Length: 210
Length: 219
Image (cartoon, rainbow over all chains, first blue to last red; front, side, top):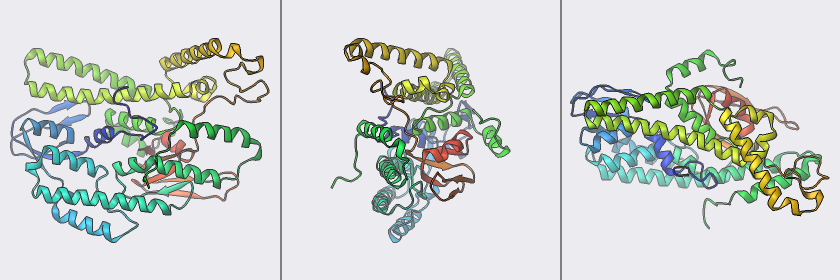
């Protein structure tokens, strides 16, 4: 089935994560006149030259590719802010800085399609990449110190990051829970045979190859 | 299921201010992330289908009227996105029906969650597979081992029916403040309180009810 992610490897494919990010609103400055667009997903416009307006990212990219608008980069994508975020990410081992849920995807789409609208593009790009690397490393390290077996809070973790660690975390927490839970004697036989089968269904996918 | 009757005023407001596409996206994400099949969103799917048809007609008219091709292509993109969501939603459900074919077939609760068409599909699927197994393998086995559902005749329960693994963990985000009970038999009472926007790895059973009432989304 085209477009479906393989549920055994990761729940959402990178394309699906990007699809969701494309619904985030961004500000553009159109350079043409166009009436309001009455989409199924909402009404956008109308579009008047030099008057900024809010549209979903996919629409902004479509207009930009045809040379019909310029992007106003989001506030968080400034060199100043990203430098601060990077410093803060490096300072604290346990907490994550608040960034848009889809910051990786938004940044990538903007780098791909609107490089001339981002001041200090190369600086911004390398900052976002550094932030992403620091956060991923931190997330992997923090996995070792998960507490609690029924609910684990993960604050300010982004869409891509969640999706990346999900298969591993799910299996780990399932195992914790299974060992933690006092199991009724009667069910033991059926339960373990079921667990066995499911374990065979889903291929193991370690987060880090070491 | 109980979702409409239990809905508070806050939930109602979010529903009113949320477009069908947003609701469809939520349904799609929940369905993809949940281990079991969820309640079929009949009204939502019908509305989405209607809107898709409407836009398809509009696009045809626009083409005939010679409207700016740019505008037409933008409408087409919006249409494509909605169609993708709807198709993917229905396909995820079909995958789950196939995966838990025999379980869905005998579980009253799971049956009620299916649409009429899905029920027909589930029934035929289970029937065909059962027939195939019987003809190709089971008939050649000793009498005690001829059941599709049981390992042998002495099994008291249907121990060869794959069931959704409800003790699995999911990622969820709360839409409002919610307090959830973590309590299970043999444990001390414990609750988890979620603020709006909090992200949790959590056991599916704990959030099962909150997903149904729309207080929590899976992501």
